[in-house]
Length: 167
Image 1 (spheres, rainbow, N blue to C red):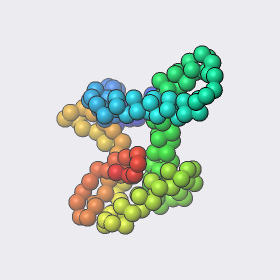
Image 2 (tube, one colour; image 1 turned 180 degrees about the vertical axis):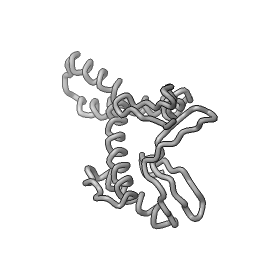
Image 3 (cartoon, rainbow, N blue to C red; image 1 turned 60 degrees about the horizontal axis):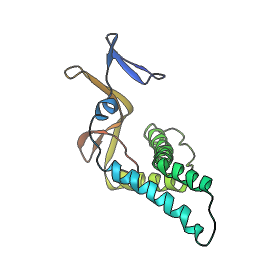
Image 4 (cartoon, helix red, strand yellow; image 1 turned 30 degrees about the vertical axis):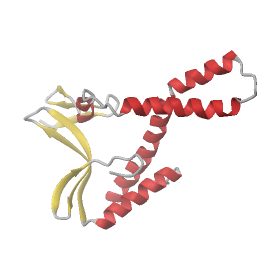
């Protein structure tokens, strides 16, 4: 028996049985900070748009468009953040595997890569594996961790998180 992973479905199987992934399992956890964050994204978008409206006639169509855009402003921000995170993750993976690293696509991704190197320089890191699939037979869940390493002499399973920095 071995753990199988279907890239297209992003699904794990063990002995021909579906095995939930860590990300899927964690979706059931409430993330209360996301609600005010999303509201803030809508508010910021609205404010940015209306600042230029003083002393100008604004059409109902323009107001409706800005309203619609404000409702989805958080999705654009999250999508942009995902692109940055993907770039930093790919960089770290290739760095760990001692392969050619990808181009850094944005200034924010560059800051993420700089934070990654700052963390690496601050610790003694011996990477044992990168993009390692893991599976718990006991609890029947699987996942792919970003790296397995000894960090300052302690064995860790690492998952890189990017946002305003790297964690």
